[in-house]
Image (cartoon, protein in one colour):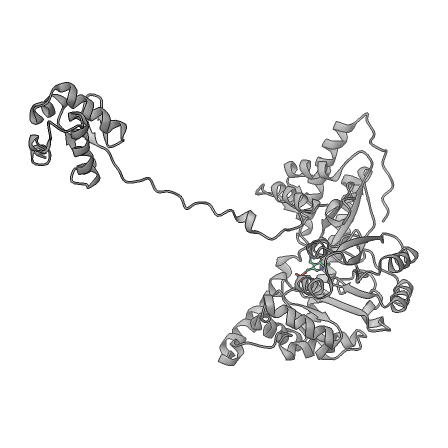
Length: 504
Ligand code: PMP
């Protein structure tokens, strides 16, 4: 580049108040900023520049120094002086302060437990006994493949439009018929399809709870319910229900706090597996009727019994119409269907539908139609027979393995249905320590604290026995026992209690 065509002597004003070196620097600056001298252009050495402009070498040096200070040129030692790259570095978008924009959310002790759980499940070969999942290899895939292809070839445009928020009427009818068979005094209008019973719980909280309202929950209870009620800013009253239900304490709560709801799982409770005896169900309903207490009965596991059939549900025995029942196909078929139901008086269903519209115009047509076909072909009963038989075997294997490998260090009651073993560690071992150690041996579970509204449960844990094959379950229990042994050894000589006889 012939620099003399861009910058020359004629452009300088010797009698200006501005020094010569400043004038030279300004001339260069203007040409550089206007890209007349593009980035990377080589500039003449100081000596040449001085000659070109008829100034002293010192003036040329000072001009370059000024330009360098301004970041317009760079000097590469041994190479020369160059125009700098003025393209501004890409500024990342100013970060949006997301967390400041969020509405307040309850940060309960559960959040940290779940974080710990997720962190411990990062090992590839982890055997998770944590999630409450059916075994995917038992999903009735053959039937669903067939129903899928049958359905997709017959789908019309109207099948893909909107349906009522309360759900696909043929499915509501089929469901109501099933429930009537189980003793429910209902019509299809009393049933509403929801995207999983978790959504049903959410709707209940949304429709009934204001901040500060009291809700009675079993202690321990389902983690997802604690979260939903806490998010509604309800105050939770714990009702310990491991052995018998303390009806006198319940009545005390009813009189003292006038709670809006009692949330309860009377059949194969999650996590403790308890089944409420028939007489106790009747007593509870009598008390609820007397105080006009609304009972939310959550029953995802009632059909998964491994010994004898459990007593009728509270809803089937409901003498006063105060029971709202929740159910789901997530445990008996597969969770990806996202299809559950709520049963309640019609006025309540209408309000649920209004509330659901804010978040979900209706649950998926495809899932509902598939399920309807599956139910009307009478396939569910066979499937239930299959999974009951398989899960019973797994339950027995896990019980045996727990005795054999972990016997001295934990106690449990044999679950007669559902998905879980609820175990208590002997004194001296904390579940959180065990979870940490189990992460290293490659097994995970849910620590007991997750199931309590009041942060108790530090020595309890829940193991799901349905997700994996017997072989893998066995391996999981062995890994658990290795983790337990590490803790026991590190506690030896301190306060580990001798083996207690497992209750089975
Ligand atoms: N209630 C209970 C007691 C549960 O265990 C679960 C699933 N873990 C649910 C409700 C929610 O199930 P879903 O939303 O999949 O129907």
